[in-house]
Image (cartoon, rainbow, N blue to C red; front, side):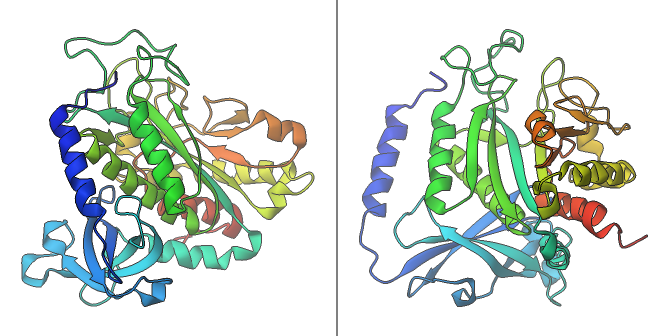
Amino acid sequence: MAFPITSSQGSKTETLLKYLNLAQGEQVQVMYVWIDGTGENVRAKTKTLNAEPHSIEELPIWNYDGSSTYQAEGSNSDVYLKPVCMVSDPFRGGKNKLVLCETFKYNWKPTETNNRLQCKKTMDLVKEAVPWFGIEQEYTLMDVDGHPLGWPKNGFPAPQGPYYCGVGANKVFGRDVVESHYRACIYAGIKIGGENAEVMPSQWEYQIGPCEGIEMGDHLWISRFMLHRVCEDFNIVASLDPKPVKGDWNGAGCHTNFSTIGMRAPEGLIEIEAAVDKLSTQHDRHIRCYDPNKGADNARRLTGAHETSPITDFSAGIANRGCSIRIPRQVGEDRCGYLEDRRPASNCDPYLVTEAIVKTVILGKWEDD
């Protein structure tokens, strides 16, 4: 088994269900979720409402202690929470909700990690191009001691080879967590397209999309929160570190698939190739947007090995997973479809990634041009 479920863990689950099954009348619990000052981690707290909300407009603005989330000083610590995306809550069930929020300082200026606000403005500018995104979120399951789930405590598993899309207790670790997260996303209404075991043992991937514009970032951030929350129930940890294990092991990315209405049309390959040319001119700018530490995290992953292109180089090719930009073989044959940007790190902010692609490919300019 991937990990043991002890009798005490089971009894805790049964006890929790006893309380979750209690009638709650007209009142509902709404869990507010936000990105903290790291730009990578999420936080959450819950508010009781007297009736089930059916739209974002019905949700009140709230606040939290930003001095405890790396977003404010203690002398002026209140940070505003503005709801922007609401889904059904798979953890409490019933009429209860999860709501993703933007964060604002005391003067209503966005916090440094509120990248959604500007991304939304950019997406509104290009809505006629109907930009679609699909993001492949890779992550690694860890024991609470930081050791990869299922790995020998005093050694390493067999080399990579049998684990990708593998089946069997000696090849796959944590499938019960993955299945729980998958079903939770479907229940919530998240646009999850699939999942699979990845090349490194205990590493997995799920796909979000296709989503149009700002919806891509919203759904990926909520799905990440849900992943961490599911792992909490199993007493393990989901790591978004782009290179969680040093050595001859694959890193973790957030491959981003992108298309416009023109790319999806007949002979759209011409526009795809033009997009690749534009992306080639802004490689350094994109690298700085593709992990929270402006390329430092990705430098550990984008080495030219393990299905990556070196961080200093830009490359593109059909069906080539060693390139910066991959054009899927089917797209080449159909002469229309989408491209895959393989550079974003697993811990990237999808708002920054999707906005960067739109700026380069559709708008053709950045603020400092």
